[in-house]
Length: 399
Image (cartoon, rainbow, N blue to C red):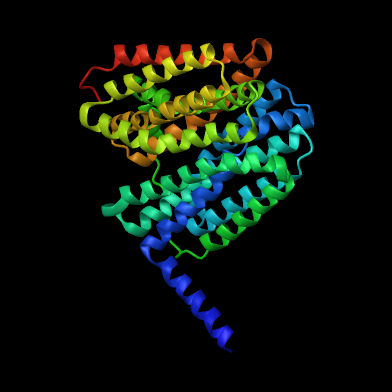
């Protein structure tokens, strides 16, 4: 009887916590963390998967791109699901989709099963982000909206930092063991998500207004800047992991490079974002693009495994940091046309997926034909061209 009462008390306390606004925000962040563990676990495994399954550089590029393609396919359905069911139900179903993807990845014995797992995970990712962000915002109200969103993104960043560690552990302990365990964790988080208070989160989207926004040239510039991080991470995941493997890096060092991206981004993104708010978008973007271009050149010139790992982390973090100002540029222009941040985010998500997929696929094709140096040089050229465009198009006080 005592044990039953203790269990009942624990359940009651859990329900009470989940009913609090802070409890909803914390659980939303946990959902984001659980999703991003899968997303970022691939890089340290790519060379090992290549040797085990006979993947080429080209197929590895498509495998990395699978997540981004799924993400793109889920952008519009995510909003439709939220109009159909409450955020907690949508979050639970999305987490189940991601858990199923983890199981598929655990048992995948060929490219197509692994690719399908990545597509399903990407689809579930964009749906769960729409649900948990909506739930967190609805729980705290407009006064604490920024803090709630920041907490959810912090959860995603923590998962992004630990995901490569999961990927590296899958090599000695076995992919089935690690990813089935991950799926169990994700299902448990999904059950917690469905225990959140029922709140309807119905995004208000005006597609006609969005089409009008796309006639604004500055919206396209902002969409490129906000989507370019996906392109860059796709290139770094494919060519970076293979290059480190070629230089003799152990899986833990490959994982450290990609964990380093997330850890550095925790400091760089807020800094670049605050600078862009205070002094305009131009100067912070020039700094980030310029420093990333220089670091990419060093990757090609200085081919040492530890140096390359550090430089990959630096480049990835710098180019991730431009996403915030890019989204702010889109948001500024959309709001001038009567839209809101939600519509700006939808535009960004819709263009982010294909751009990220293009980065991974092009890296696989170029790397397979001409080597990692050519892949990094192309990314460097695009980064430098983006730098020149920002310098010419954006005025010092513009946006």
